[in-house]
Length: 228
Ligand SMILES: C[S@@+](CC[C@H](N)C(=O)[O-])C[C@H]1O[C@@H](n2cnc3c(N)ncnc32)[C@H](O)[C@@H]1O
Image 1 (cartoon, rainbow, N blue to C red):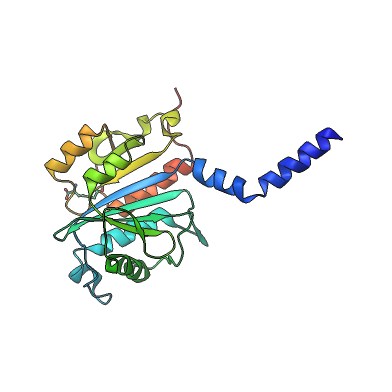
Image 2: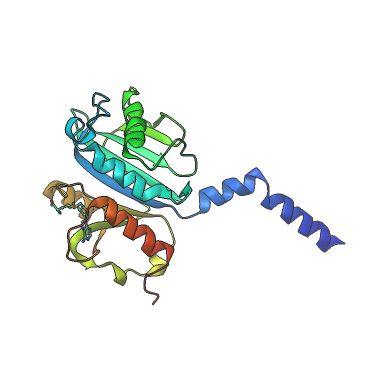
């Protein structure tokens, strides 16, 4: 009888909001950071010509799609940070899978969501734009400070083979750092190195950042990393 009530309690707890919160908070997150060196920090760009008017925001939009979009849904355990450096003051947009709404697979919808986030008067604290999308001022320095407890992985063509990463080192929060079409500046590389990131490669061929993210999601999905 006692064990029956414990079973009932567990079943109730498993369906409770607290349990949902616990699962959301303690599930290891896949964080993807993409640096957009020319990406606009203002909403003054045209949805009719995203690559030509926004400082290649299209690259960041495709990274968002690659990170979240799966067949008939979005990944809840993903968080994307887009660093916009194409303005006087850098801005970072954060997209969180648990609460993200209105994301469709097309670039235009994503660009419209980012445009809306860029209309907010950004400050040093995160401000919510739409559900699951937040914006603040600041760039890589601030973000690396926030993620100081995460395992940082910097993706670069000449890094160590990614298959050498240890599976159990990825159980906690992991953040993958990627460049845009111009890669990463020497100054950014110093920051990333000082933050303790491991430099890893997906092979010698230079890929698009969004394609790298698809591969990273796949490698994590199938647990392709080595167990020592
Ligand atoms: C289009 S690539 C950058 C191209 C080139 N590195 C440059 O400097 O112009 C965009 C980003 O994807 C990542 N990347 C591309 N190919 C990769 C590979 N084979 N292994 C690891 N990361 C890669 C890197 O983070 C890179 O900065």
